[in-house]
Length: 42
Image 1 (cartoon, rainbow, N blue to C red):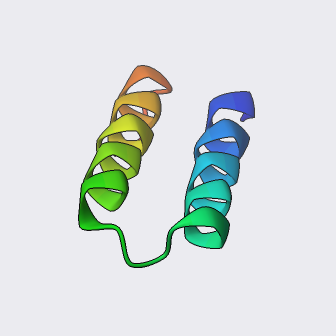
Image 2: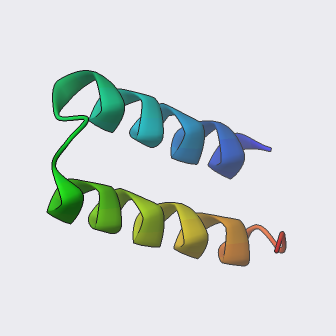
């Protein structure tokens, strides 16, 4: 589950750096969704 760990790390990095930045959140969430889709997880 390497892609899941990558997505989790991306979210953690984003929350550490700019927790209130909605554009950054939207970008991270889209990236995480793309990673989960590519990993076959919904």
